[in-house]
Image: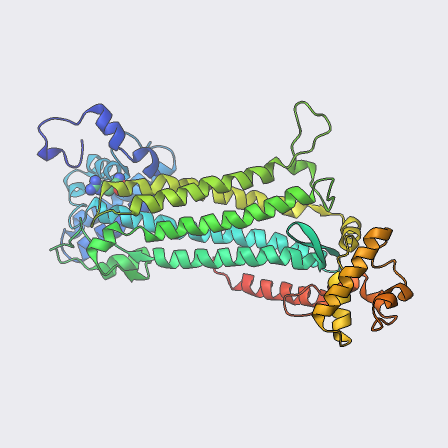
Length: 459
Ligand code: ARG
């Protein structure tokens, strides 16, 4: 029986029912829905809007429904949406008292409340997964803080960097994501229950009671906005999207660095895949899939932004389209964060190869120019001089480290014997001691700072 059947002389067409239903996906909200109904029923009783006995009977019935769903005894099916399902089930179990649950409430404030409860706890779970990924990265930073690798711009070798500084860069991104989800949770933590269908209610409800029972920090201050605001869901999807953007960058690096062309990291067999035709292949399918799944999460964000655009006040059924994309993005982000945290725990950096690569392709050229500038040569002039040195090396098949002091002196009188130390990749990386820079001590400070912020994250 539909909750709204009374007004209709004829039943809806089966295809209209199938098109209209949301139970197939909003059944995920069963726990949030029952939790919110428990609080609503208690408030109705305490405010004497229904009798204490009815309130207690409703709550007892709801508890049983919840435990029957969780034990698998009760299958969620046969109704338009999760709200109708729970209410129908309640009425079939406890009779008339169950029919009083929907007093001073609408499915509009109910679904908005359920969805906020869901998003709030999901944001907490994602913070937990981000923390685990950051911990994997911090372990790598701690282990390889004394090693160097090439740093890139435009995917061309640029300057030698510290390996910990590299991993720290991703920790910074994921820390921002975690903080963003903390913010998303905060904005979701506002209770619309009590908004009614759109205009509030004439019953003497006490929204403070339900707020407290549901653990919300605030109560929504406008019932029209309360039932139709989905900003929190859009923000959640944006936070998911940016997390995927960061993961996809790490994927790209992983794919490159585990290739034979780079040879920086070894991917363990456990997280690699083979080819059905080429026996020699070891493919980074996991990374490619994570990178590819970024697209669907962006799609989920854009879909919701488009759904909420132009929706007139207050609730409109368009808003039912808020759920599937969010559930899809949630599963995608959680799966990707989990697998990446596991995978990063098992990658094996080839420190020797990275150190060799860090010295290739004139990565210390900036250091030579800085050397001259520190001896008083204007930087722009020094830049030109070093450009000439690099050109000479390219013509003669030499490297900056293989040039003799005499050869350097031919380019500038300012060169002294200490230049031969400056052009060592390790010294280059270690000379950049500015905050956030590539020296061992700056990278160590970076790790300390990340650990401090990691420990401060809630959940
Ligand atoms: N399934 C609906 C949704 O997800 C619940 C609210 C229905 N409200 C209504 N007036 N039809 O938005």
